[in-house]
Amino acid sequence: MTKAEIITEISSKTGIEKVDVQETVEAFFKVVKGSMVAGENVYVRGFGSFVVKKRAKKTARNISKNTAIIIPEHFVPSFKPAKTFVEKVKTGNKPGKATK
Image (cartoon, rainbow, N blue to C red):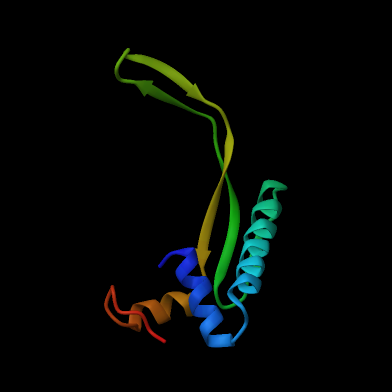
């Protein structure tokens, strides 16, 4: 499902204009991104957590030149689904069949 399809579905279920739904969805993503860039985690009860994970410094190999390179410590965004969300997906329909 794409962002456009999500916006269309929310609009049809709530009766809110697509433009307003799009602005709201875009604002949500902007807040999540901004919080994570600032190093803050975002928790949505019953859905999951958008967390910033720290990756340690490590040594890797450049196989084309057969040399060692150092990958510095860095941070990556991650999503951890809530237990209730995971259970619903496990007991839900097969892939390709959306539930309404």
